[in-house]
Image (cartoon, rainbow, N blue to C red):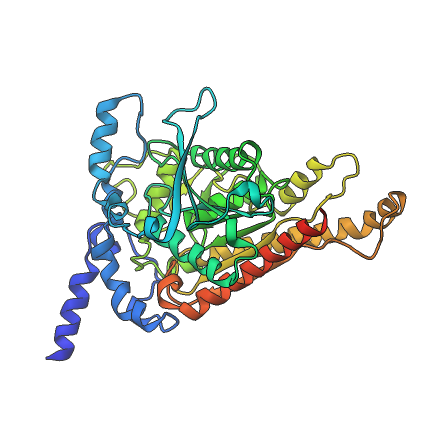
Length: 450
């Protein structure tokens, strides 16, 4: 009776709206039922793995249009009403930020030609922290929330957990006493397609650093899920500003074979071994991942009956590289060389990377691919430094034994997509400690240069 009851419950939880069982498209042969994924944390495997499909509702957005004419108010309202249930996660985001931190909002005007209201950036500081003017070496942490570029998912909860942990690690408040933690409320798709979200993150970073004077003690960029992808591109395009970046389980599409061969206009897909193995995932649902990718890149969802019914779940494509070149090692070196074109030598090393991937996460392989891309960029950087640094340093009268070398650290968790924040406290503390140590090294180097 118990076995039958469990089977009935699992079956009922497996048929959530927008899930793999509720559509006509074939499920990958490599897909493994959640209860059989022994690599997952037991609680995620047997409980949250099934309940999230019922509680999260994001998969309900897959029936909504992925392209919206934002100049048509009726079309926008109808689409937003369709997405309302999937976006309800923001309404549940009730982290008590105001009780834990000093909270202020900054509204930044967008450049001429950019649509939307002024960009909202929420600034968190330690309660009753000293004025910034009294602590010129305070660091800045810029955080981009996840949600498939279409939802503001648990941004307050993650921000609260991360900033609170960093403050605890700081102990006596030596470095973080006047630090600023900034949350970017970037524009969402499908109302605003790529690169609107990236442009907002770049606008926020440049305004906070160059206009408000924040980050004199180090500039650190962070993002989770879709926010991790934004952190990658924002860092790539701000190498003269960013010191470290924390990339947590990013959405990383792969180039199709044709794209890789011709290096011209091609297509990208989230299809990978991890997407196929975890095709039954509820966090995030693969069907919603595909829809979000299309919404973010302005690709119309095909609604003609039967036109995509035979396409395996997870294999849809888009023609836009949403990483903005961050998945190309040479792009990191070129961007750095552009900053110091007179010597073709990085004046400072590439930013230090903290990367997190997760077992049970359909996006795991994308994160691992970025690990290899950035490792290759670091290898190329080291070769460039070794070839040129000695002669240039001698010409400038500098030491030749202080070769600046970047670092990258990778952590694997086992609670599915962004689950380690709640289900792996030891892992979360370790990862935050490693990131804090990198911040502290940057902070110390700024003090020594004064």
